[in-house]
Image 1 (cartoon, one colour):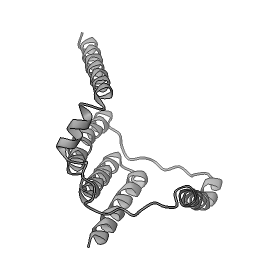
Image 2 (cartoon, rainbow, N blue to C red; image 1 turned 90 degrees about the horizontal axis):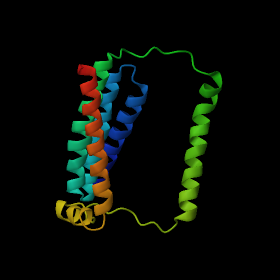
Image 3 (tube, helix red, strand yellow; image 1 turned 30 degrees about the vertical axis):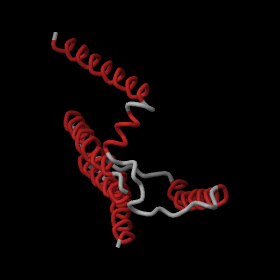
Image 4 (cartoon, helix red, strand yellow; image 1 turned 135 degrees about the vertical axis):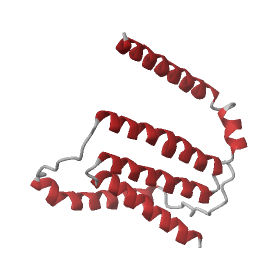
Length: 166
């Protein structure tokens, strides 16, 4: 049953990712990206990383995608007009993609031959307590640096907004 749900949400994530790239309208593309984020959250949930799954939904599918859609609407971006692509790209694109994946599979099987398969639910480090302990002990400096960078970005946005009002 776990394999069925894994394949289902992996296929949904891939289909939504393809839809992000192939969509002509930017809002539809952004909504497809929400589908990718939710599918990834379900996959995290299946692995036992509950906190990471919920953070994926709240932060990426929620806040970041609302910001993307807000910016798209502010820019008043219409549907994309398609132009004739390069004949070389159309003819060599799929074989080049297949060759890339074949090389990737070859490198992974050559350099990492003894990889064990993933067992769903065996991961125990995805809870809020475990992440909080790591975040405020091992990763305290990067966390604080990120906080300062976000604060600088907020102050910069306020300064730019004030200049536009004056």
